[in-house]
Length: 285
Image: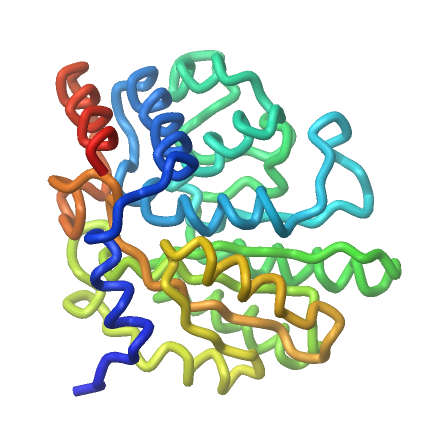
């Protein structure tokens, strides 16, 4: 049995640390979407919040008033079912109006259960059919190199998603092309749609797997904002190796009764009382 790394051990205790106001605010935006749609992937949307927070707050170059700015960085949420996390950041950054969150999954809304490029400002790729985001990101990173643009590409994938062979085909190609401007991020919350990843398809040792495909592989506590910030600031985006970040996270982080629970991966229907219970839990997180 593999011995847990110090980072993985620390990340397993993440739920013991209180969330700061910024992380609570973003999770409340997720809840606004849940209230509007009456359904959603709550566990999958709560686990990557700090990753997206740091990327959108501190790392990525973008312009909400000009979403197609050619030199922008690209963000792809390959695990498209966790779209409420991205919608929360897009609302926070004024790509979309905050009131739009309440239309989530409603007829004629731009906010579907998976993000759609061309419909939602700031969404670079339509995702949800799992296993394709890294390939799309690979193409964008290659295009940036060919066109000599400074754009960087960040792709967030689910841990269950990387069971898909297409992920590793893209990884093999990214290593071959030495794409330092490509960053693959695994939201490693240890739970996929119906069970724990160790029961469905064990993934460890993940850092060694990514390194074997030519990536610089780094583990991090995916809820530690300072650690994430330092990590992204320290990357060599002009180097000759892509980066894989294995971010140890807690599924449903911030909602104690949903944390570590496969049953909270997705709910087809929430009652208003259930969503308000989620909101109340965040007040105490």
